[in-house]
Length: 110
Ligand SMILES: [Zn+2]
Ligand SMILES: [Zn+2]
Image (cartoon, rainbow, N blue to C red; front, side, top):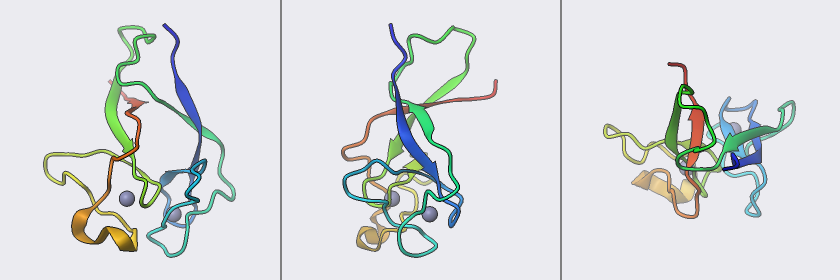
């Protein structure tokens, strides 16, 4: 089974966050103001599969990361802060959204 990855994830030098720069909606909302910037960033790829079946069993990974279509950032819901804190002005107190997002997996240190 192939390992599926999605590139065009970028580091923003304004907020130091990871955001998706390939969205047709643009570069999102940066908590530092305006849109995120990919200037100086590499092109990062995330695993875009819930359970990366192609991984060896001894590889540690964490799934359930999501793209927020409002601000463009990568985020993960936790029980303490289920929707996080979204810098998009339209989000208000509703936090990030996972609508339209895939389920991303990051490799984790054991
Ligand atoms: Zn930013
Ligand atoms: Zn957001």
